[in-house]
Image (cartoon, rainbow, N blue to C red; front, top):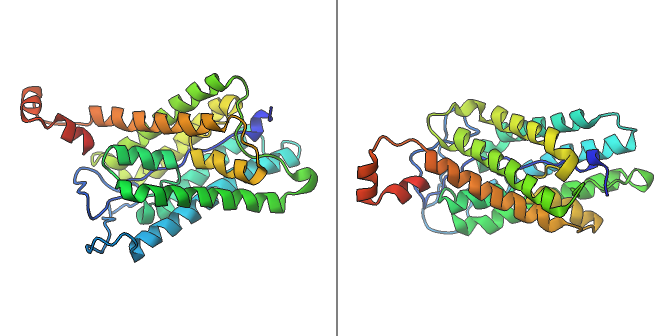
Length: 285
């Protein structure tokens, strides 16, 4: 079983990304102070466009930096006699999430997390046709970052930076579900609700990551992000209990997004909502 400090993970971040084929009038971009419209400039229906490729590059670069910094803190801490310490690792994850959100959030939405991308898609806030490309970009970024760390820290400094349950798989599965649920709940609130202060979204999400890692890291590794766990697993060829970090964060993120949509404000009375059949439509906006 890996040392607790070596399994601390990160969730990916999440910003809502608009698409030219979907209208999202009731939310704003999490990383843009001016709530910049992120719709694709092309309306020809072509899937591969320059703006979309820019978003994918941003996802690769953002995920790379996030995993390199976060997992790097884990590797350095193990290689240098706990110099960084467990609280230090938690702070690195939180700060890394925050700075990446503010740097590429206005370009790609700074999902950096397959669970976040899938959760947004289930709520009709992200086009399903773009999900595979986003997920692939996130996994590539995580794998490249993990590979870079292994090249730099080899030999006796080569420590596994992935996530492993420090207990039973079921315990970690439940914990990953709960912490990712709250992460996505907060993301939905600060990034998709036009009443929230969008400029502070990166700070709110980064702080949530820090808190989750602080108390859940010693048990499950606090991954909250399938790409965060998959990248190091691919590089180190260690897939033990990997399913926990695929299922837990994904289902938790979907649940968190839908619960927030259920409590999203509406000024219509219940009788009008149910009569018009707009309840489900409102939950998707």
